Image (cartoon, rainbow, N blue to C red; front, side, top):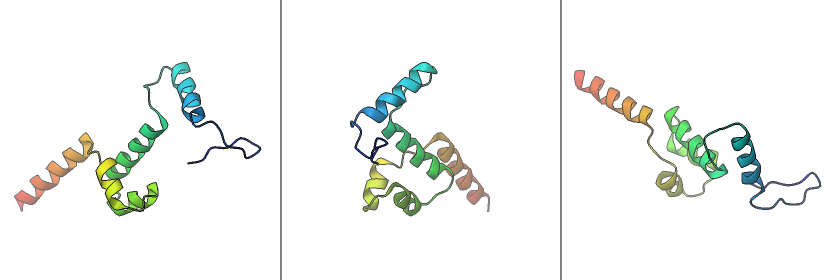
Length: 92
């Protein structure tokens, strides 16, 4: 992601996180950084049923291993859904 000023010149690397931290502090929100938002986005995509390939493309990874090794945190909801699917399978 590249953030720029109105004139197109690049922002300081820390600027987006600095602004995000201002918003978090002024609204008493749980701390998170830009990368944390990206991780959350990927986890929610998986929870919503997106395939690993769809998430890889959405995140712009050229190597699917990157997506699988870093961004495939299994949420509690996904764990519950997996257990429910297995339970239903065993009832057949």
